[in-house]
Amino acid sequence: MSKKAVRVAVTGAAGQIGYALLFRIASGEMLGKDQPVILQLLEIPDEKAQKALQGVIMELEDCAFPLVEAIIPTGDPLVAFKDADYALLVGARPRGPGMERADLLAANAQIFTAQGKALNEVASRDVKVLVVGNPANTNAYIAMKSAPDLPRENFTAMLRLDHNRAASQIAAKTGGKVGEIEKLTVWGNHSPTMYADYRFASIGGKSVKDAINDQVWNAEVFLPTVGKRGAAIIDARGLSSAASAANAAIDHIRDWALGSNGQWVTMGVPSNGEYGIPKDVIFGFPVTTENGQYKIIEGLEIDAFSQERIDKTLAELQSEQDAVKHLL
Ligand code: NAD
Ligand code: LMR
Picture 1 (spheres, rainbow, N blue to C red):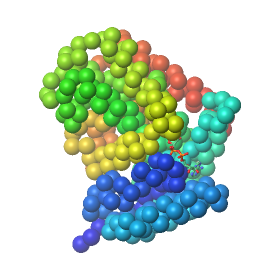
Picture 2 (picture 1 turned 30 degrees about the horizontal axis):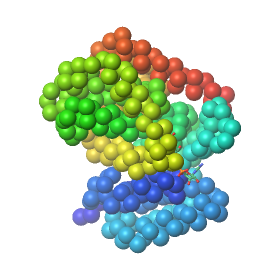
Picture 3 (picture 1 turned 135 degrees about the horizontal axis):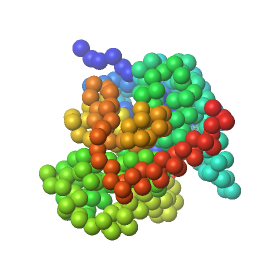
Picture 4 (picture 1 turned 90 degrees about the vertical axis):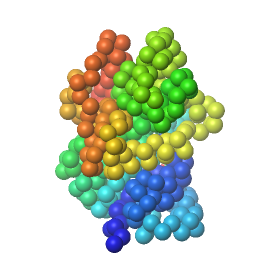
């Protein structure tokens, strides 16, 4: 017997990431090749955005994906999130000319407050929320705080792109295979302050730290390369990363929904106080996932270098939270 369709809401559906994401969700790469989906696609109500969304839908229809039971386009979050089992919050306000970071935070705080409230009102009580739109951790925090009737652990932010970027750099450096990396993680904010940590990682069963054995490379090449990769892509493409961001979103939800088979993955999730991170800060942690739940890996040793990095990315997240506090 075929499975019951699940409802997947995607915001910013006519944007770049949306275009790289929707076709993969529809083909079953995110939730499995046996899982039918109903796509609930949110764009701003503006005529141009809604028309662009119609174009994306025409293309989805033309793929004749057997798993797609329905597609619902809308400009209203209450329609997009109605009974949603998954919500991928991709749409966000980009930084415009002359806009300060505080203005960007405030503009996004409005969007994610409204979307958090709408999720609270109409989504499935088990909805799994992934925030991709930047600043992703703080937007996820705002949505979580605006949805008091939903379990706080259902709100997550995307650190998986940073995780995948780190894995790729490590494979290149060691000459190993990216698919043979285990126990890698990225701590903190999805921003250049994130701390990609390979101290516990192995590649092909061998310690990555021992294989690299170069703390100068770690501090001066690896961390800046991973941290500034988003900016490097904007510089090269004239547009921010889209296919790799969509790929990371697929990885994040797939592992959360279907399990990571004992592997560590990185998710931005609300802290319960682990590693001294204050409760509710949405922080990149190493997790394993099973039966639709994630579990933070606890008890890892944090050395002085790592503590300094973790403190720095935490301080940035706390200053972002402070900047939006009055809006919550
Ligand atoms: P884009 O500008 O191409 O598309 C964004 C879309 O969102 C637009 O179509 C816009 O109309 C829509 N939108 C804006 N506000 C909306 C709202 N309130 N409700 C619904 N839709 C809304 O941008 P993109 O390249 O697709 O990137 C989307 C976001 O993802 C950006 O904030 C970007 O910085 C972020 N991003 C995050 C990561 C990550 O790793 N977390 C990686 C890459 C990009
Ligand atoms: C990325 O990491 O590629 C993006 O978050 C960059 C950006 O600013 O959109």
